[in-house]
Length: 268
Length: 296
Image (cartoon, rainbow over all chains, first blue to last red; front, side, top):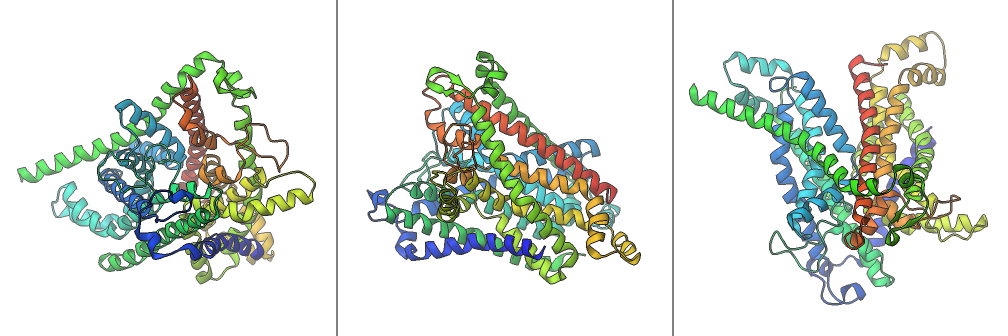
């Protein structure tokens, strides 16, 4: 059994090791800062700044929209806002949405965009990523909110507060580290997802100037670059993957640190 | 008091609306996919769509069988590779491991569960495909390495965190008293594991497996990069395959130009959503029941 565990750990560690090992050689500062000049995909000058900035735009935009919806939903799943039946039903629906493959979201997003006459753009990518991130955020937030002791809320209600006052003053404050973790978790998932933005965000060599411009993203940058037969470009694919990995790991570590830091005010 | 009451009513209504909105989103996705898939279901019969092996979109002939079989086979391989290893790992973590070690591994598994699938695909192309090529050629089959086996291996690594973490959660719900009572009766640790843990958490383990299956079924990018993408029913482990998600991802460009192609692809998306959704639903309902009862 220990062997199985070690095997799993080796496989997973191997992923990181391979990416770092292959990505480090091509990982230069100019890669991070410049956008691709002409002929980048044929091995000429430039960098992947378009993809890095694009991914950040997409993920931050989608996180923002997703938070706007996820927080009310997570609050609403408490007992004081909805009955048990509707809450359970919604939770099941959210679980199904959580498990839905991201390509389905991409296909749905594509249909919606065609219907509204949008082209592959930053806006399209944000919409689809919001849909993708929403179940992840709500699920994590809801788990945290559920751990808040009932007595805290009852004390608050006994003092004569309304539901929303208790929710903001007590629940939100207690659950804040968990909510931050949930947001960062969804952010990490959203920034790395390729299937959903494959047809909805497009790809470009430039940094988008408006919501309706197509936008490049790191996962797609890796995907397209590895597909070329030119070795220099493939090297760049490894470097882009390394950048993506570093961002995701950074977000993961930061979320853990923040949740420890915010936990000071929590009643356990 | 009135303004407070107004704020409360207003926010309660907004919160309830957001709940309805979320349900509506799920419903809308399913409905719209169905509407877009309807033309092709109307034109060819469902049995032809699901079981025919001829795939010629230009002629309007859409037989999804190779893709369905490809998806099922690559997922099955991933499950066969992942489940024993992950279950044993979870058992080790839950029963034998030191608390700190368990926390460390959980941390590692959680972090690794967040790694984007393109990176898994990349590592698959760099490391797994050559391995499979060497293996396949030494066994005599002319393979490029881009095959079912490569897809299965990559998927197995991807679903490992899911299976391990769900299995650990399920093992945690078994009360310590059950373990201690059985050990006090004199059985060995392995017997205790077999009779107490595995037997009582069987439903939970199945749920963990099903959740892993659902994740593997719908995974697109990583599999796309290693599986070969040839629209034929794979005859051996070393043949390329073409799972459904890869089909949608590869062909969205031609979707709008060939008639009925977009409907066919939406049909595959719908199929994916229904299958994965159905499995997820069953698994989550089971896990809910386990949670509520404390242990099965």
